[in-house]
Image (cartoon, rainbow, N blue to C red; front, side, top):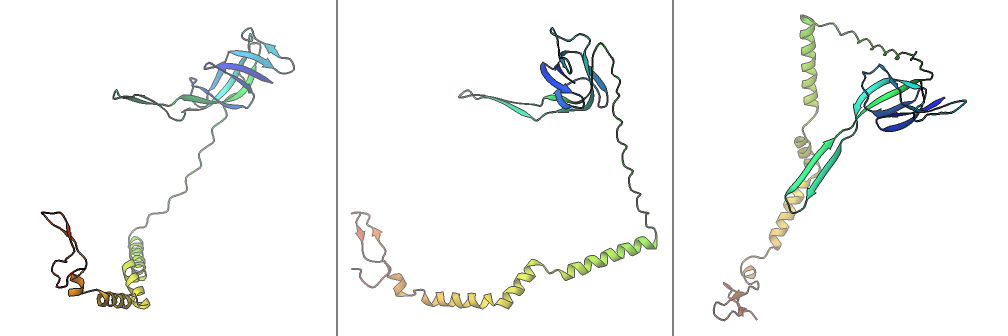
Length: 214
């Protein structure tokens, strides 16, 4: 058996034990609500309303009252330094259809009982006196041993460099670069060009060099 109901300006085809989300309906979770606007009742024989089916209603249980995802409404007028931003969350009600009633019948089913909360596990007995002191001492000892057993990153890096021998290689490469680097007059005779203040021509002679440039 099914029915077509109207609520919140929308129409829904429902049957027993269906769970659906409708526009907000007054009611607390666990209550039974009744929808009186029934357009069609179907089963062995289909009954069409004109516009509603007389004496027909649908009972449902309220499961949850909530709000949907946020929708952003942003409006901007270009070159007018005008903008507006609004957020909206539509409220809804989650219901479960319990029964479809005809001929003016009243709901017979009640809300399902709520599951009982699970008992909390018993708390461990508090340690007192010597037991508490022993526990603190053992925890401190474990932390100290852990800190000594785990070296820092810097110590590990230094030890690895000493084993691999990266430092001597760096010293050798630095010495080689220093030996190849030009010094003295050879370094000062690199082609440098200066601009004359009067003619604006480039001079090929290097400043501070005894050799004439070609």
